[in-house]
Image 1: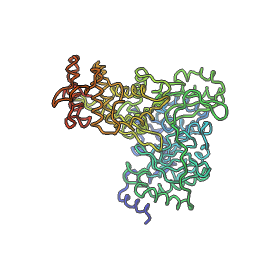
Image 2: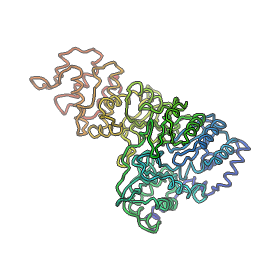
Image 3: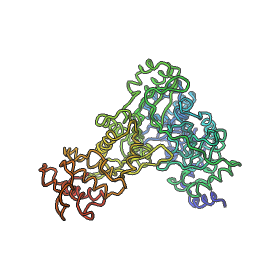
Image 4: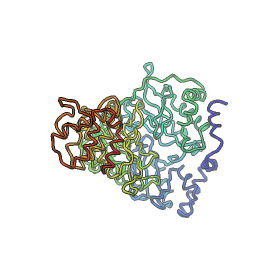
Length: 635
């Protein structure tokens, strides 16, 4: 057997029960059942159809809103004409309580629909050239491209034709409807900037150059928690569709069908190695491909605020939609504004909206749309992602969207920052639909013990990136009470505000910070400073991390932190004495200056941070946290 055959055989001892449902799936008969449910009501729907089959048509039963459904509408590359946007808005108004979510895959989700209304809603969408087919379960999901594809000054290869060619292979094709081992995400980026999370896809073509020719490098196996890896292939635009078919066929044929948590393309590639999978692609194609070229997608994406000059001489106007919470009425207004300029609408992966084709900026900005969704938003609201949360998703642990918006508003008031890019990405649970791992700061909903009770909380991650040369964020703070999380984040934002370089994004600032300090040091600074502010002990709020060590050793970072605290408290240096500290002697500064009694519980901790005998100092930050907790000061 070939390595792919062997890998598949090793994982084929037991098939997941879902595969039996898929074996029996037939789109035509499933559609007939849907029409029957529309006539007979919610109670008639079978459990298999609610749990799996209807999702093939993008129809999702939402237990959080009983007997109401969500429809996920495929918006290829996030591009909507004004007429399509009007229809979508009308469907939301008529059947879905005027509610719309913009998603991280440049799509629209309609909510609160009754089963009786779904056939008519879908008919209206289809008549407008829109569909919800294959937007759920084991299908090829919405294809992502740059929202400014074909328009942006830095767009080198327009990708719309390739998107439509790839989509034509699988969309409404019985051979590809719900026949994959697991869902499959696709992205194509022909721009210098990464505005479509290109490296987070199962199959990604990213702008590259080789021997004077523009094309793409192929990356495979991205998913939540893992960026796609280079397949070491350079792909010409005319090869893209055939390459997609080859990869898709290999995945369909050899992908695993046992453990649904480990059935994505990533796991098939890991089982045989990328070099072997690359060879299998060439065998499937019937010809070799060149090795990868020079990657040209090196700029951070998402920084398209305000007015954006386009390559046809017109402009685009950005509208910030925090967490993607939108409405049918808003979309109709966006369509009216776009139509007045002979323009169109583009949706972004950060759940925002762009109107293109603007000739008269002044007139367009008078639209009520921009009064509600700012054209030049706060840095904290501009790139704010949040998935559905408990109101709409059965897996959500926290409300999420309101929490994300609340934090953004709090930071805007508490630590206002101008000319900055801050990416705060929220996932309501570990499934990661808010792509938290790619955020500068990522948040994942969890439950936290507090005073003998269980309360809502978040785990906070740091250092995610949209760059293929970067990586997923790392855990920074675990189990933070939800309503307190904004206070911890504010401490990092003070640091960013005070120490960042001109126009430096938070992503680049964090990368620079992490090149000098451990995440333990950053997390401790956030914990310590927050507590000191709450206790009104401003003298012990450390002004910066400048005095920390730079060799990523916790014990040396702790010592530097202690020295800074002593100086902050007393105005003197701990070791500015004629004689070295004697064994057990307290830092002289505490004897020479009287400080409020409220500070006393922290003296012992600070003394141990700077103890003259290195072996008697703290070794790791968790020791400090433990000692303070025993003293009744939990950080």
